[in-house]
Image (cartoon, rainbow, N blue to C red; front, top):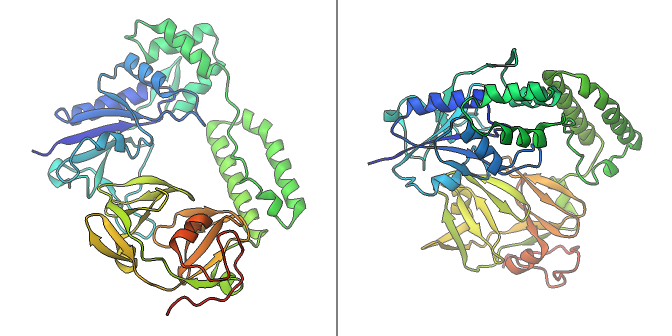
Length: 406
């Protein structure tokens, strides 16, 4: 019999009455399901670690298993225990945290809106989103709807006001003094707004040096405004600054990969016919490639390279590029490609899914599979897996015009 897995994932910074309302609504909707609450241990941009998220959620009234995962929206650590061919996966989300149901190209995405259990496919094909209602709640006489408001209110309150907030968020807890010490540690002072740092070395690549200086001045002058702004104003201002920076960087740098870039210093090559290993993804996830983290869909082929590096390719690409030997093994077809050693730092956009792969000058080869279709291969791995011209070694730059096809 198929099992129903319901997972409520979130940041929970901290777990509050709004989270509890969503949790209880989902529990009532799926009383017979295997129910979990999931959170990560990521403290890069938010203060509370997993173990204390779990403690606070339990003090609020969560009785279900509280599980650490890398990405709450893709809780593979929980799903790995179940059968993707038969079991149904439902992710709980608030109306405030929508999920896209279509991909960039307009085709249906992995997640689809939950309608009824009778209409659900096993999670090898789809996951489903159960949307809970917006749950505003009152803290110290103020209407609250987000964790940001909770954090700001706590930082601005005195000891008496903080204890009142704790009484309202964790009314049944018998460890309120412990909760206060914990929240004083994580939320006792209002955090500086997080402004994303420019990519390392990116400003130096701007042709217009004055523009770089103006951007730095803008960020410095904006900090006092951010401190005095409402949450909505902060989000809007940071979004505008980010878009302005991206636009300026795009307009003022000529470092990019396109078909014309291969006209000088490139060579023809092909992949050596060595045995490669693969596995077929049963459900979506991410894989850490040597060039960055890449998302993959159910049905994608996860390849394993000569140094244990892993990367995903679509079923269509696998069919076009590989000869399937069965039992999780294949070998590359002899297809002529163009390659060139990177002469600058940057990234390429994968044609089949729109994600980026990073590369660095002198360390990565850019491989052109077709018009506008590029990949990135580390130099040492390229030497192992691709045919090199006779006058080129792993440690030398490429300047030869080489035809590898016999």
